[in-house]
Length: 148
Image 1: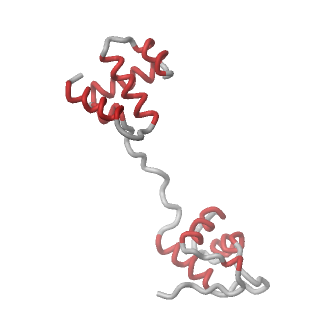
Image 2 (image 1 turned 45 degrees about the vertical axis):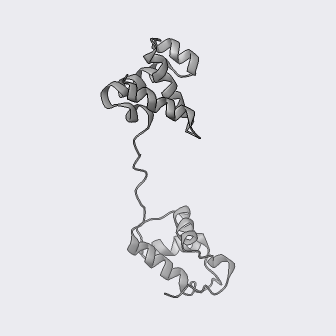
Image 3 (image 1 turned 120 degrees about the horizontal axis):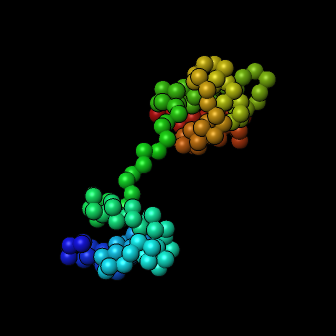
């Protein structure tokens, strides 16, 4: 391990709040650099020997940053595109179907599929969409959408 890497780990451990997993990885690298074996490091840091070996391999192959930090994860894909979202919000801003006095999340979900605005959609997706637009149609009989 280079002197620069040791200094960076020392700075990371000495300053501020860090994620626990980053600190554990830094401590593991320091102990490995001091000559400890993977099982010894694993016992003292409460990691598995396999995890310690993976940290060491990432350090050797890709450097200090990759050994300490995880790559960003892509996350789940958006279920609704912008056009579908706009159509659902417009539907909620209109009058509820005949026989209903107000929109509910279940009713919006039902009607969005029935009116073929989206092929399929879940209640939670609709709830999050309405929340992001600050719409609460189940609280009022007439929903007033903010004008543009």
